Length: 161
Image 1 (tube, one colour):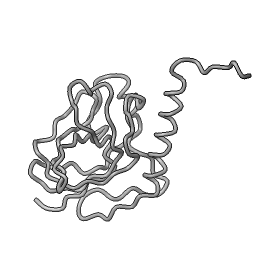
Image 2 (cartoon, helix red, strand yellow):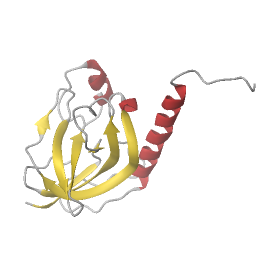
Image 3 (tube, helix red, strand yellow):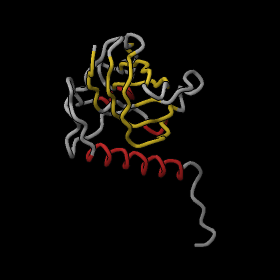
């Protein structure tokens, strides 16, 4: 057995499974106080779905950031609603994705969203919010977006207008 080698790519799949398991466990345990908007995740509640989760490099399994929604959220072809958050006080811009808000236009996203109903609060431009979810780098979008993402958003609370 000393000469056994794992097939190419399997180690990455295993690492992603371990990371997403950690994300799920963190979501079950995490309780964020609600100011107005979505309810905090309930113990045992699954994370909002993501199509092809292996494309997301998990930086932190669960984070909470506060900040200002910089632009009107945009409807994406995968059914997600995306926006940029100016995180305060650390003054970083984070891309935020709320998954399965609209019916997806392509099969992989439709399969991921099947049976899921989005309950994450949708913010408006200029609102000061608190968002909680996994902090990731999307390896597919990385050429276009260099900032990190909160994807999927698990809760969004509106702190002020």
